[in-house]
Length: 355
Ligand code: TXA
Ligand code: MG
Image 1 (spheres, rainbow, N blue to C red):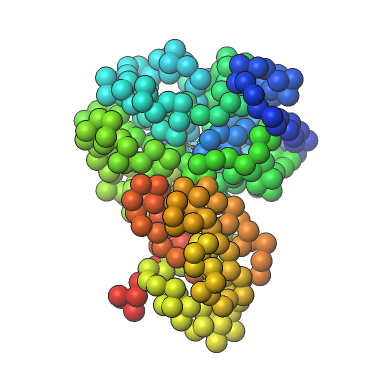
Image 2: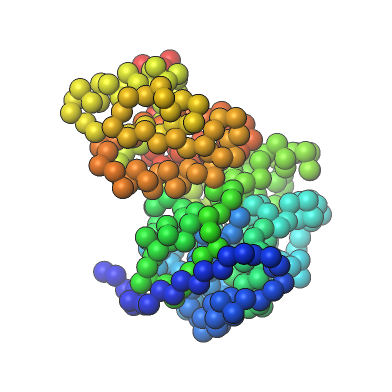
C-alpha cells in the first residue's frame, strides 16, 4: 500500500549560477521546506539527490517512503564544511583527512565512525558508521549552507530505477511525492560518488564512482576493493544488494566487437523481438536495430558516464523488448560505468569468447 501523502511538487529553476555564496530566493524557499521536515530534490555534480534534515527522523522517513527504498539501506550525509563533517563523524582518521583535502568538494563519500546522536538512526540503518560527502555543486552547497543542516540524501529516483541526472528525471519518478525540486540543469559526472570505507583498516571501495581507484591510490598509496563490489550475493555497502538502475526492458551486456553484437540483434529480431542497442558515437553506424542510442564517446569515458542514466531512461520511451549494450574498459571512470551497467543488467552478460 502507498503510504505517501499526495503533495504539490514545486519546481525551482535556478540557472545562471554565478556564486555559490549567493542565496537565491528559490533556495530560501526550499530551505523553509527542509526546516519544516519535508524532502527536497537538488542537483549535485553526480546525480540529483533527495534531501532531508539528517537529524530529523520523521523527515528521513519521508525519503524512504517517497523512493520506496528498503529501510536497511543507509543514506549519505551531505555537508558543506569540515566543521559539519566533524559534527557527524566521531573521528576522522588522517588518511580520510588527506582525501577530504584532495577530493572535497567532489564525488567521494567517506564511511567514518559515527558520532552518537548526531544524525537519526534511520540515516545509518543502525550501523556504527556514517557515510559523509561534500558535493561539488554550487546549488547543493548553497542549500546546505543556507539551511545550516546536514542533509541525508540518496539519489532522487524511485528505488530500482536509473538515478536522475535532470530535474525531469526526478519529476518522472517523484512528482506528487516530494515537496519540491531545485532544477539546476543536467548534472555533470552522471554516476554517483565513490563510496570508500575509512572506518578502520585499509580504505576499501564499497562502490566505484566519480573519483577513480587510480586517483585514490595516487593520493594515499593503498586502496582495496570490496570483493562484493561487483557481486550481487554479498554486498558490503548495504545498497549494493538491490536491483538498481534498471530500464524496463531487459538489458544484456555484450563483450565483443560490433559485428558480434549485431549477430545477437539479428537473432533476436528473427524471433520477432524489437531490439535496442546502447552504443557509442564511434560505433553507432555499425548497427541495424530498431532503436540505436549512442551514449557518449569512447575517446572520453566521462561522456559515457555523464549520459548513461539518461540513455537507459530513453529506452523506456521506446517499445524495445530487450537492449544489447556494448561493454566498456574497466579503467578510470569505466569501473563505475561497468558496475552500474552490470546492476542495470541484473547479471545478464554475453561474451564472444563464451558463446
Ligand atoms: O553521488 C552520490 O553519492 C549520490 C548524490 C545524491 O550525492 N547519492 C547516492 O546515494 O548515490 P544512495 O543512497 O543512492 O547511495 C548510497 C550508497 C549506498 O550503496 C549505501 O548502501 C552506501 O552508500 N552507504 C551509506 N551509508 C553507508 C555506511 N554507513 N556504510 C556502508 N555503506 C553505506
Ligand atoms: Mg541510488
